[in-house]
Length: 405
Ligand SMILES: Cc1cc2nc3c(=O)[nH]c(=O)nc-3n(C[C@H](O)[C@H](O)[C@H](O)COP(=O)(O)OP(=O)(O)OC[C@H]3O[C@@H](n4cnc5c(N)ncnc54)[C@H](O)[C@@H]3O)c2cc1C
Image (tube, rainbow, N blue to C red; front, side, top):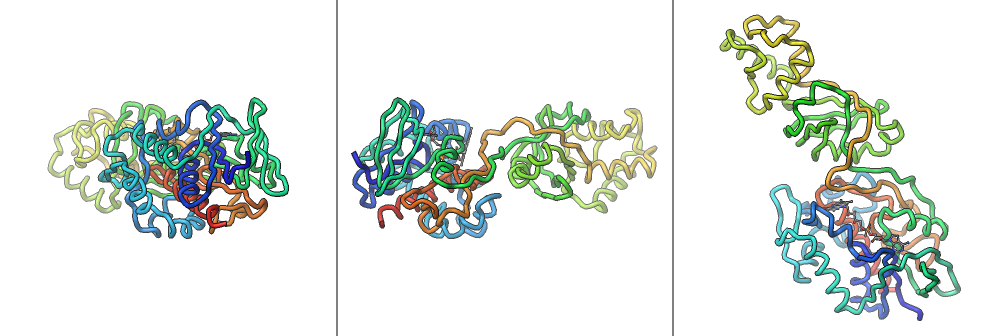
């Protein structure tokens, strides 16, 4: 049977594309999902809570959260952005809440609710979903496509929408239809260091100013960082890893991380140290610190890393020791030697080249009737709901465009 649209991949983009296309007039819409379950990434996302978008409503700020695809997303977000996504889900009956940091979750804190919402709306709209239907090959014919599915089943379609996420098979299908791929590399990961002085501070989180230097290129961030047993993680580190993903990959995940643990300027730190010395001369340095926000374990770890004697009293602190402490507090340098484990979220940077896509419709410039949406494209965001958001957006635009044809 010839369908108006066959979608490859039953993830976030696949469902949004299917629902939008059928509700805008396409008569027969099919989703082919390779595994036995649809929306599995939605299920595990956000630690099982699904951070499905962000309350960053301003498009010029919103696009800053995308290391790749920033330019192309401006036009797309002008049509369907965070406000529209928020509204879309609420209208479909999913109650949402906004957390202090702007992340949007279902009120129930359960990703199952998002799955229930998408599958129920798709079913009600008449979308046909086939699981265990891994698409192996696509061939073009005079008007449309033939899709060969594992087990030797085949489907025919006037249009196809590839929504295969970071899975390599989607990229292979795109290549077979004439597309080029920007090499996929991981994004959103922690950084490892062999620096021993941090071992005792594992689990500490605090705000810091950080600068990562890879191959002489500098990336800067300010925000919460978490000290792990292997190095550094937390929102600011994940953001740095996303923006430097390609460069770090090319440099085998080696670079230099400079941290200002206090987010303070040198003069301010010096005067705080001087004042504290004046008022606390008889106290031991290691056990008494002038900075309330700096965790004790980190203060001790930093002092020990520059060989400050545990018996040293504030009154006996020399000028050179003070200089070393200042340097250590505001420009401590750590050698990054590898990529650490992923955080709660992980995405692929790279994918179908953006040059080959018409961003008014999400249609291929190379193959008529072929559309793309979601992570299969060379678009990715940082943590905070931005990855799902570009999936909803690109799939909504594709679904709309197909129904206008
Ligand atoms: C642990 C984790 C947590 C995350 N949490 C968040 C979060 O809270 N917020 C956020 O914004 N982002 C989050 N992300 C990122 C987000 O999940 C992805 O960006 C998003 O799922 C991509 O959606 P997609 O529809 O493009 O692809 P996917 O969700 O990956 O869906 C693609 C589907 O295509 C299927 N498929 C692949 N190849 C074929 C084929 N040849 N034939 C048939 N089917 C095929 C796959 O089985 C899959 O079901 C998280 C990612 C991970 C790994």
